[in-house]
Length: 219
Image (tube, rainbow, N blue to C red):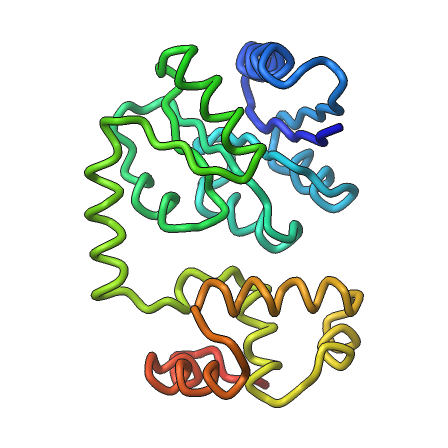
């Protein structure tokens, strides 16, 4: 059974998404709805979800901030971003994150929406044909120009700071008041995002991209 969170400030969208998910994945899954940011945050703090569907433009919060909140509260989430805009300026930022499995317009065909949910819950990325070229260009741009540490969430950056200070998993867990298992998950996710295998490589990476001197140094 999957645990699924739907966050949208429009009741009709929440009901519609729930209906499609039920049709695609079956009726046996546990689905939670959030109508605003406070409800979303409470849901994230109280449970672990296999799939999170969010409205990028919920009232009262910037969509990117919402994604950062999710990353701070959920380990390796699978996110489907929905937007009411056909050409959303946040596409590149969102799809630059490994956790975002699909970025779709609310005006997309039902077939595309179904495919997005079906792939995302399995951890696969779904990209409509019209977005393929744009996404390929984005990957080349990020590989050549962007700092890979910019793709870390606030919590991942903090864990990175502690790793660079030489702390182990148990010490990081104590420092951040999280379990050692959660700390280990964060470490694995950081290594995967930065394409490093150990702390020595992490230190070299940090020096190369100026992570320590760019306002992220440990206190």
